[in-house]
Image (cartoon, rainbow, N blue to C red; front, side, top):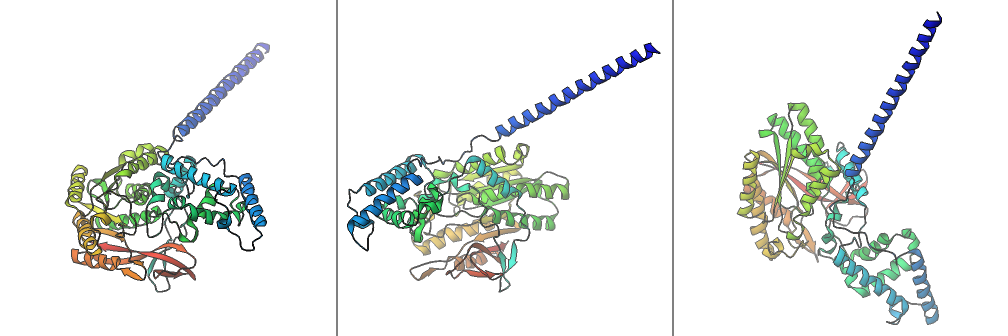
Length: 482
């Protein structure tokens, strides 16, 4: 009996020892897994390929502001004038010297380091987080009816940012009908006036000591300076999935399991990002319906040579930090720098179709330059330089681009064209009207027109829409069927 008990005790001891060993092994495995995952996450948290560097704002703090305000108020008191402005300050006044020094510093830093003056700065992790939100965002319930019963894309996600602009510092110095943001640094008198009136006298504390918020106020006040905008990636996601579902409904599947998108005007890559953030949903839908893997193909062009390589940077960052890396093989990206209205663009696209094993594109989407409204670069192939007169631009660029898209689309393919008339000094250039006439001539049938919401609030534009009692500015997006 005693021997039996001793054996049982020994057996229980060994059993406990084995349990402890297993526990140690499990713990080791868990720790190694966590460590591996952390290292993997670290690998996916490297440096993005944006061009922005954070500005040195060491001399733009609440302490500096209080010093500047004191200099201004002392000068006003010493003057004895009831009506006093920065113009009353001597040219060698300490405040003028301080502000001109800041002006020179940040203009130099923009030119030499492409810092985000006048625009918000985001860290790499904030941009990655923005990208992930775009990828996860569900686009259901964004289409509404306005008071006239027209199709409206209601941007309740209007302010869902992407951080995309940080790949393109040139956006801050792209001319429009208004001066650029960087022109706000070049015009020292205007800068001094706005800085004193809108920052010093309105209280730097309103900006919580934020350098970028205060400078943003300086540059954009009263539409003096204007940065060009980017196409909303989520609207691109909406129309891609709408067209994709329609294509599947009609055909059941896709030739060679490829969905091909052409964008004849790459712009600032908003539509590229919209394509990337559509990829997960499209592949999931296709896998459920066909049991096969879907490849998404994005083909584009733009004559802006300076930013040509940035598009690939965005795609590479997407698969390095957002999309699972094993899906990278199911996305193809092709870009040229030829004019979209030229025969060279047709040849480029057809060569890509041959590589993909398809005979045409399923979808086209673009927002072309509105003639000379935005002057993207000084490349001679830019349409506003190539066709300086509107009639020449209409016949040479607009007609050629629409005809090329028609020729590249498969039968049943859709072309989503975001274009609007432009007005200046009371004179309207009927770009949208002309585009629709040219589209009909090419053979397109306009299925419907979306009103793409651009912003809310007080709206003076002719393109005004009211949804749920709220006024919005919109731009038309024409849905054209081949």
